[in-house]
Amino acid sequence: MKILIINLSTGESQTRNLEDPLVGGRLLSSLLVSEFVDPKCDPLGPDNALVFASGPLSNMRTSTGSRLSVGCKSPLTKGIKEANAGGMAGDSISGLGYRAIVFLGSLPKDKHAIGILNSRGFKL
Image (cartoon, rainbow, N blue to C red; front, top):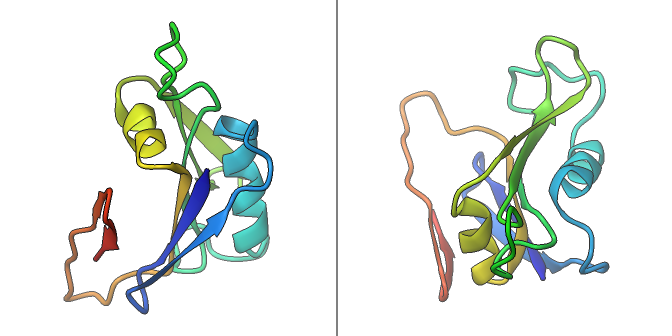
C-alpha cells in the first residue's frame, strides 16, 4: 500500500510506500497529521494537513470493513481529531493501491482545482 501526498500550494504530488500494511484508519491519520503538522500552527491556516485514510480491511469485502478516517488539527480543541465514515470511499482509495491521501498547503485565493485519482496516478 502507498500514501499519496499532495501539496496544493505547489501542485506537486509524491507517493511513498507504507511500511506496515496493517496500519490504517484512525491510527494512520493521526500518525500522518503528527508528521506533517506543527503543533503550534493555525488549524485554519495552510500549515494544517487534511488526511484521508482507509481502514486496514477496506476493499476486502468484509462486513463494516469499508471505513474511511479523516483527520486534521482541530480548530476547536487544537489537538488531532478524526472523523470516521462508511460507504465506498475507503474501498475506492484502497482499490487504487493507496492507504492514505494527505493534502498539504492551500490553493491561492482565486484558484480552484479538481484532483483526479485513478489507476494511472494522480493529476491536479
